[in-house]
Length: 378
Ligand code: JHZ
Image (tube, rainbow, N blue to C red; front, side, top):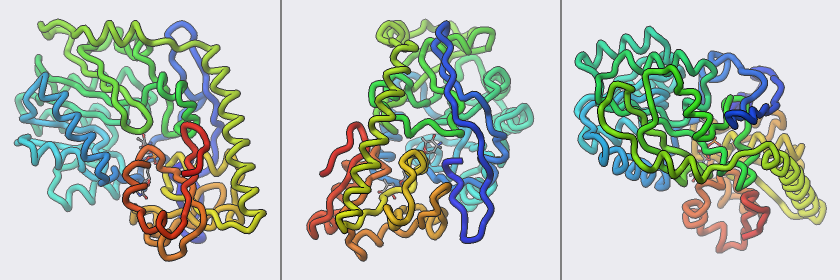
């Protein structure tokens, strides 16, 4: 499990097959198995990044949402530590509520005065949310949640419970077209049960109380979609962006086959590159214990003899060990304290920000290895 960073002597959550299946009819890609969400999310170590990139993303989301609806009351499903809700509150939302299955993160958010219910998004949680908002909520947010969910039918029906006729639902998911174009194989892990196209998402909405209202492409996390939904009984018309986005989409089995070949090539390249550096006496470390880092490290079979440590800003991940390799995760200051010659940036989606931030590393001769989109030294 990609976020299964354990403490010294801790027990891992286990293993499950990681295989992507493809439906040529609706172009949906899905994992062959779904791991129990209680196993994956009960105690969760991924905390929404407080980075500049994320703040800019929140501002963009707010602008796009503001073009459709004023954000007076906001419900967020998968609210993590409450970072987005806090942002919404600062920018005018007067009533907020988060729902999150992670015990530790819900507690963290509640302590910071972000009202949060510790639950998965099921009927009970939907009824609690309806009671909280009384007359129906204006906006429901679900960032990088829908692609983690196995039972879409219930998820979509439960969204109707706290809704009113003009509720706007905003679902953000990684876009499979970007995944294929950029060969982002490192975003394939057990938390992501599906890899959505707009076509497959539209098919999933059939028979639900929702229809597609607007589609926007976003740059965050290597390329994502903002899918805005309106209730089927909402009178306003769907936006042109839905038709345009559908027309520009091309997801085929052939593209997945090419993706697989390219992914194997990239894995071989990074693996050989790092091993050659280490053999010639250079020190290499990892930067960012992202879920993506776990995929790369296991695909390349890296051990501590190749990557001495991985730095990460997330306090919850520090002094734990990367699943599969047991490479230690340390605080981000280790990069400038230890000054290794090379650092593989596993948080490549934040690289421009990281590059600027880690000036000392650069000035002392440190070099970045970027694994994405192509393996490159900076
Ligand atoms: P980051 C997560 O994937 C998991 P991950 C999840 N399944 C999902 O859907 C996606 O997000 C959206 C660290 N970092 O955000 C913080 C630094 O150390 O790319 C993070 O641990 N220094 C929910 O884990 C990691 O890197 C920094 O300056 O692949 C980045 O992880 C910055 C900016 C980040 O997501």
